[in-house]
Length: 145
Length: 145
DNA sequence: CAACAGTTTAGAATTATTATAATGTATATT
DNA sequence: AATATACATTATAATAATTCTAAACTGTTG
View 1 (tube, rainbow over the protein chains, first blue to last red):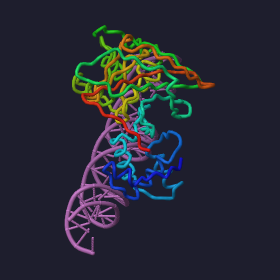
View 2 (cartoon, rainbow over the protein chains, first blue to last red):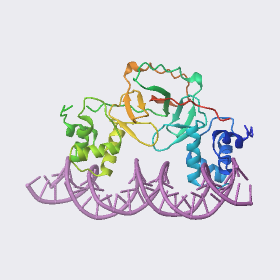
View 3 (cartoon, each protein chain N blue to C red):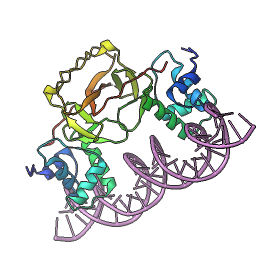
């Protein structure tokens, strides 16, 4: 952590102007040892509280989406109510704790590699994601018809 | 397909009053041969256009969520922008066509069973879902730091 | 340092969903 | 069958997440 990367250079390489807002957001997201999972709301709160900086909500959305488009952030699908992002953009899976709404990374060894046997003509697989939901108690499923 | 199940009885068994709106929604959802994927919006449109019935948006939300809570519908996580439901509540995986936003069921044979080796103490696995995204062209991922 | 294109911003607009409170209706009881 | 009551439906308002807009601002290039 605190690699103090030259975010200005990084941003420039991406073709994004290194504005002070973007650099701050980089510091918030990428100056970390561990993978970071967040919602836009988390991030805005973090920046304003921990970093004592006010960045417009729209700018945070723009920037996060710009980073996502460039492949430096990944969007994670959980239950639709919230939209999570992940600083770990490599192919990896997640545990989702339904009790605490916490998202946990899977290591490579936690899940055997997925073997997709179906092929859709004209399409390439762009990702294979596994979401393992865990909870204290389990519910059973029924069939209607 | 027109199994013409007795939805009134079914609803009653669930402890849900068989109102005409609920029966209509059952007809829209469960009178089908194949699994059906939909958003609330799709469903409302279908009911008003194809079935020529006007059911309040709030009622559709309430009813779909009631069915989900009872385990007769399943919510599927894709990209957060839309919330899909599935009439197939058994454990199964999905393909998601990023070009057309279409959701396709996986058969049992399309993906080998997932072996989850990690164990979270005090938690049970409540589901394991795989989402295979497909698209015409592929993007590569990069690392920021 | 001037000019320009790309950015930020506050606030409005949009979209999805949930809450509210009045009205309606299925069901059990008479 | 009429009635009471609890549960449902509805239109509308409220909330939340996200995107749009248009004006002001700022990196960058020359």
